[in-house]
Image (tube, rainbow, N blue to C red; front, side, top):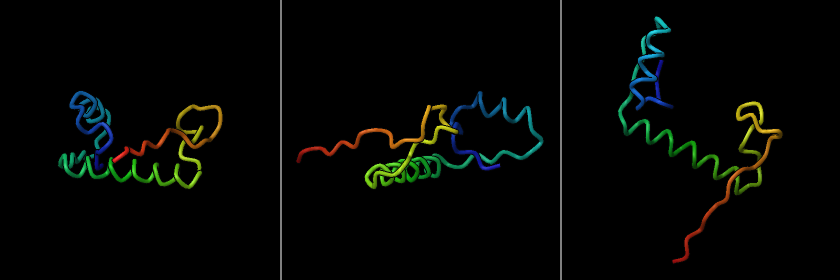
Length: 75
């Protein structure tokens, strides 16, 4: 299993490892950071388009919605 979310948490990885016979593959920090950046960029695109980027079924929110504020710094 390729780990990314929580992959830097050694305690969490040990707990998961103790519960599964599946081989856990911990990628480089560069791959972890790249995946994280892609996900947040995608959430930003959804926000700009006014589309849902927060699912109630995943987050526990009462409704699906377009979450967060986009900050555009002044040059």
